[in-house]
Length: 210
Image (tube, rainbow, N blue to C red):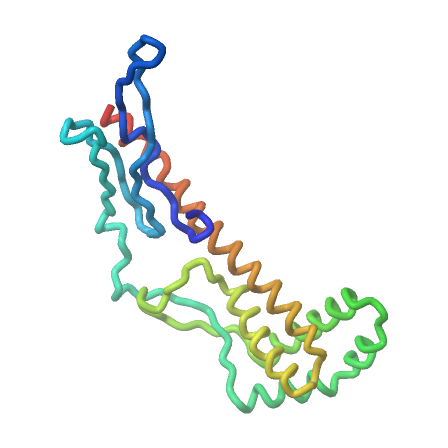
């Protein structure tokens, strides 16, 4: 479940039963029922110890006030890419003297590192960072930060260059695979941190319900 960024909100036993074992009455505690969330909002969850059935009812409450308003503006930073600046960028990249040195490098790892440095430097020149205000509706993936957005743009441009045989396709695939790993890691860390933020609330709520 955690691989899909879903985390449990119930950490205490949801089924308590008494059974005979070796002639003795033994109480068993099992965590069977749960509620999994991937919400970024604050929540409280717990168990209701009532005798409706042999399973305790469980609940999760999401604080409405913690849910960001869809009309609230947030300033983001981005890079504007248009046909004019893209053509200048591609021309400078293809005709940069450093490209020849990269092709003469024997180590694939070193060549990739040099190419990425050159690519990033030119990227900053032709696509400088700008600011823009967005509503919360536009922030669909809060774990995608400015660095990842920049790398996504680089990935897309590497794809175009590879398709036109302007760079080795392996440069694109290596960068794409590395970026995919970074995005997955950022997403997992984001939801893990959100779960930890709410963990104390969950424990306090369980203690209150005992």
